[in-house]
Length: 213
Image (cartoon, rainbow, N blue to C red; front, side, top):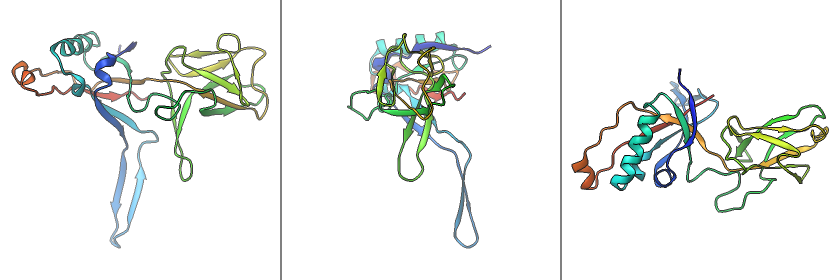
């Protein structure tokens, strides 16, 4: 059975790679010239090419070893998106008020991390399932609380659980700040490596695709 390995793809390679979000939209052209558009996916799915980050034979060997240990497409792993890996804006410091993750009702103790994109027209709320350990900061009505004494975080699912005596009261705004990784797998079972072409500047393709829950 396939599994997810809670291990990060080599960071020095990942931060030099290419990729981004993908959507799936059906577009039907009508006889009048108008269009009907329908989103087939509720959430975007990210794709990356780690090959752009492979610049040396040492990095190539790292990538191949990582590929072999994951058994190609079989096992998932963590990937750090250099453009989008934090709750705060690029270059900004993470704070406990970065993202609203829910509102208290006096009973619910579990809140899933999420990140919201946009604000005015159709904000998109992205589930965050792979927060980075020790990076999560949480506040209730603007007052930051401490991990371990007031809440815990499951870094495998992105769920924040408030401990007894700290459950958010009714209407309290629960916010969080965090770093996160993207759950991905290799999108191929074959890595073609041409060392002569690589030495001349060619880049091997190492496709990755986000794993959706």
